[in-house]
Image (tube, rainbow, N blue to C red; front, side, top):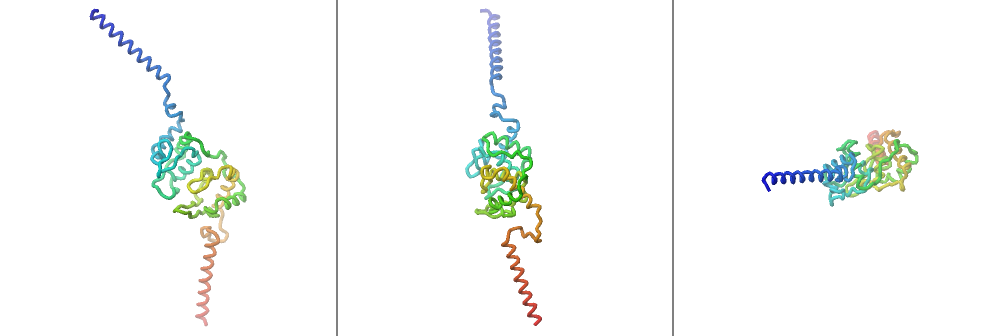
Length: 257
């Protein structure tokens, strides 16, 4: 075999190898999953939520939302309602481990909250956000009765909050929006029980919200509200003022006689 023939053979072999590699590349690109498929079929909104989760939540709740011992609970199946309540009220992400997450200025805006909800929802659905536009469309009197029956023992009959055990508390409701209250009833954050639709129907929930929000706009016909804490502080103040008045009256009578 001459030198020219050997060169020609090498050239043809290299060309055939190159054609084969190109064909394999095209074949793989045709059958390989796209980037969205690689992300388990996540929507654009859920992919944005995944990025938020990995930057702000993964340390405490785990790579796969399985939770981390002594850091944070699992989030699989918690649903939109729980994510909305915790994140939109600023309770999450938690700055430090404490007895109870307190309400603070939210870290994420509404769009980011929606993205985070979309991502966590892909790991299993839970209670969803209500579809009704007017969450106060309920009977006021019924709402007051339901609130006193189910909520007043912790939140105070006027929604002013109250102390619980182990350094925890039932927060005051004066800063809570309609959706805050609704999602709290659906998800049962911290010590609060879950009030699913079997316990309180959507109509019941709207009635309670109407009552709570009406309390904010209700004036105190007796004068000072004294925190609307009930008859005990009111009676105590009357007792102290009354005793003080009697003592002063006795001294005045004594000095006159």
